[in-house]
Image 1 (cartoon, rainbow over the protein chains, first blue to last red):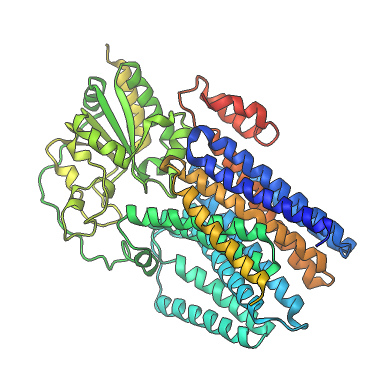
Image 2 (cartoon, rainbow over the protein chains, first blue to last red; image 1 turned 90 degrees about the vertical axis):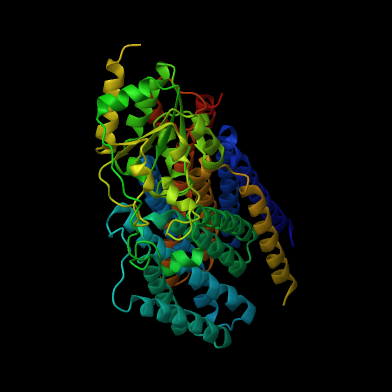
Length: 467
Length: 122
């Protein structure tokens, strides 16, 4: 190893250190921004080092330079534009798209390496990682594109199945794995192309049948896939920075996938194979019955305004109606009157892990008011009014009993509050397809309206009340 | 199995363990920024994409280098900018002018890390 190699390798180690420190600083909202800056610095070091390596190699043609820089500028510009203009409600789609291109790039690194070395004869151990890189990268690419399409509403968000879709999925997986095994024994570019096509098909047929409520799990899983693909690309080109960064992302995606799946009371296998909302969760189970009490804005406003402690339970309905600013305004008006307001955030509220927190932060809600499930549950018993906005299954007390689709799912103990107001457009079911027993609780009043309209009316009504 | 490969595998396994250790402490409040940050970190694949250009001498090589560089650059630039934008919104207390704050978050993001730092944390 000469001096140049030493310096570049050490710079890669420095970059990897920055990535780890950056993620470590994400432990608290107060240091998280510094974490992102440290991580960015690491990335700048890594890219600058690579640029030096590329220049030092001396084999890059003029066309090569132009192509590389043009690609980087074009992609970087597109990324910059998307990142600056995206709405916070559209964050899950954007993360999915970045996932897709990351996975795609990793797959291309593997393809290039293989095509280049195919004539020269390839060692088996290299082929294993190349095949894994291309396989995982291609699945991530097509899977993430479909997931983004679903989240954006370009593709129907409900589970999509067609006759034989399961068979196509299994066949694609079999072809990809079979081809991979063949390729390790007998190097062949043609087989590589077949593997890519099969992996792309598998990605599509894997994500299409997954319903909207499972999106937090899918996005986390695809994130873990991209990380793994990048690590495999690192094995292929023998670059430690890629291996370390990819492994970190793989671990983070893995943890989030597990957390999300646990919060929905489902195994990862169960989600991938299909479950809720695909029609095989059994017929809708009738609740205990009982009368539903409906309420108007004026009465609800009086309950809220004269309460001492109010907990707001936001669900996907709030995000869908883009009503995060309205809820923050209502909370501000209540706080001015001396009401103690906090938010109960279920782990799977929103479309990706932690999505609801970002939406509320955007609406200028201070983060200490956002409480996680374990922290807030004991507080419901001391709460005068629980205001549920567009949340359904995560508040259903039926989860505490065995024998129904939500059994065992961790829920927010909303029914423990002294009174409950639910803002919801109709008595429609959540993704679990069962009645919510909370709605027929004698303590519950239903305010049937769109979240945005309802919150605006409530805020106006509270403002008219004197002292 | 070569020593180099063994070293690579060792690094891979240890990095996964470090990842588990570091990330399991991140609170749910920050899960979206965390995922976005992880997303930008896998943009390191840009390094791999750039190295394609070293050996690209025909049309296929150039096409691969171009597409890979574009994909990876989009990933890395977009990822870091959007993570920064998101984290800038997290405040311990309610800030007085929310509307102006959003615009500042968009425009002041990439160029002024020092100016940005004074904004949110107390």
